[in-house]
Amino acid sequence: MRGIVWIIVALLFVYAVFELYRGLRGGAIGTERAARDQAGGFAPSEDELNRFVIERAYADHDERGAGDVGGKEASPWSDAPAPASAPPDTFKSTLEIEQVRREIAQLQAVLAGQRRDMDEVVDEVRALKAQMEAAAVSQSISPEYNEALVFARRGLDVDTIAERCGISRSEAELVHALAQRRDGERGQEEGE
Image (cartoon, rainbow, N blue to C red; front, side, top):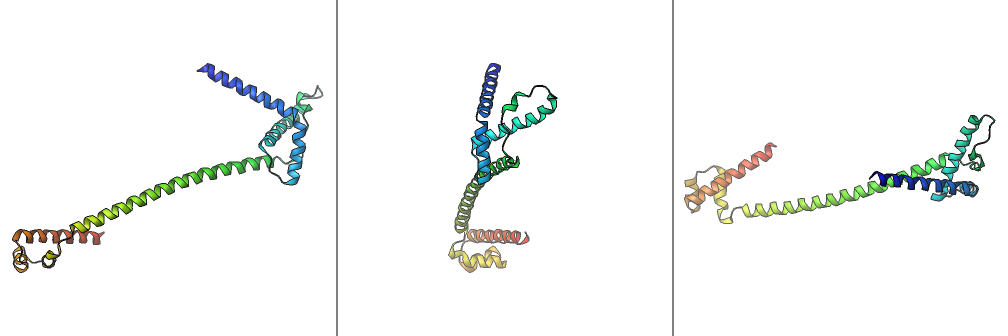
């Protein structure tokens, strides 16, 4: 496992050296193009941004190295041309804009996921509502027992309900129990 990590590190180092060499070799072209783009208001390409960063790093190194050298031989970085008079905030602003764009894309993806979830929840609520309505319809009492239900709600006893409606005592008990349960449910709903 360590061997793989070292190979990856070595490849990254070789790549960094290659990019550094490429940046040194194409430095003069990059500064002219950066100055032209800055004057024209164009957005720089990714290669131009990479060159700008490398050139800026060389310039920073030259500025720090000049004080350290103290009259000795100039640093090997002094061969690199100085970057154009482009303000360093341009690169920083471009990076911030790209970061904001990525964050917006991520937020849009999250929002789309939440919308899908919300649609699923709405569909489930509609299905449950339809089930509840179907259950309520199936629980409703038959029209022939409506009169018995009215009497039960008025508080008449089971024998009186059975006698007035012409139903059996067991049917009257069932209607009476149903009326009491519905009245209890309504009382609880009003209490909440």
